[in-house]
Length: 190
Image (cartoon, rainbow, N blue to C red; front, side):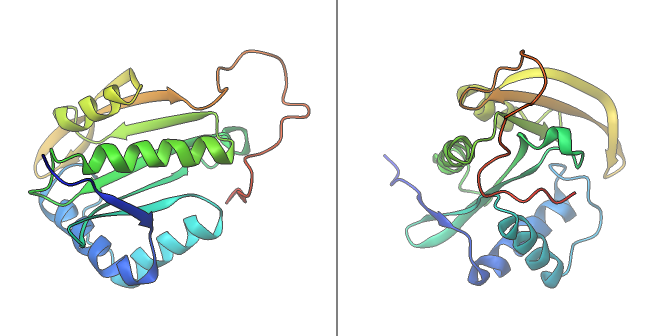
């Protein structure tokens, strides 16, 4: 049995490892539709922006070594979406299947529920990424849509899978948002 991943809040010292993992995906993968590898300073700015606005950003370690990261960010920038977040999870190649992604996503869900978010959305950048779809399904997400040929990378058109999960009491219904407090500690970037 594999040892459990140790999770913690991401810090400035993690940015080089996070940037390297993301750069590998930008250059060789299709989980992100970004074409150019962001500079280390840009990755640090993105992290700082999310953390400064109250969004969770986590790192996983296995045997004391960086194994992956996950964060939640705004689903969309319109204020009416402030109770909904989009998750992002990346695991170091070769460490998939050892529970790192599951541990990161489960912890992210718990933190987002504690903050007061009501829905979490996964936007999976390659419809063929069964591992990501299965990970999300196992943690209560359901597929709500597939956009066919929505993105293009590495010379091919890619489907994008949209998945959704309720957080806490997030069910919808009811009228208006009178008296509904925004997520605790989150400053909406809009």
